[in-house]
Image: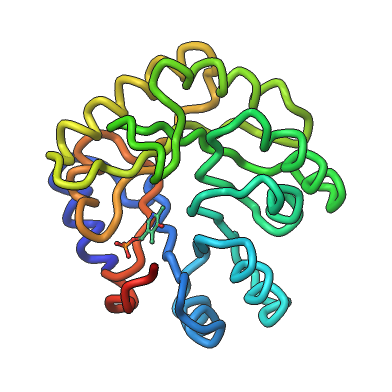
Amino acid sequence: MRARVSDACAAVGRQPSLTTLVVVTKTYPASDVAALASLGVRDVGEAREQELRDKREQLPDLALRWHLVGRLQRNKARSVGRLADVVHSVDDVRLLLRLSEGAAEVGRELGCFVQVSLDGDPSRGGVTEADLLALAEQVAGTPSLRLLGVMAVAPRGADPDEAFARLRGLSARVAAEHPTATAVSAGMSGDLEAALRHGATHLRVGAAVLGSRPPTG
Ligand SMILES: *Cc1c(COP(=O)(O)O)cnc(C)c1O
């Protein structure tokens, strides 16, 4: 997997060290997370608050950065604020206060990506492109939250190059107003090369590292 990332980085003239590989461990047991940590993985991602909570409890001693990459429910946002180091799926201003309160309870800043929907399909999360800048502004203005940049999932069946090119344009607009918010979370097992071609700084990769998961409902 590291070879695939470094090949893809080399192809676009990018240093692999500037790319954060978040290994998405959803549905895999805590023992797999421990094994990844022993192999040098530093960043792991979960899709759900419950699984994040269970794994953090089972692995209290591992120096990992925990990322929440899946859709955020409002009633779980405070807990996610406590448990996560980085949230990739901030897509509603009504989540912010709870995330902020949770992060403040543990005395940390929570890194936030604002998720944008590139196809207008709300079922996979994300704000519309029209609402992105306003949400970024709100995150930047909320205590205990740090705006890192933008996140998107390539629309199903669409050309990921076209989608990630659009994301890069949106990232530039956010960064023009928030000069430190230059990170771009894009790219999964199936499309990480395309994401790197368009400036992704954070890859969220599950199946390509851990093998395919049984389908979830
Ligand atoms: C599961 C998931 C991933 C990882 O997907 P793979 O195809 O296994 O690499 C990335 N991002 C999000 C939001 C996910 O839910």
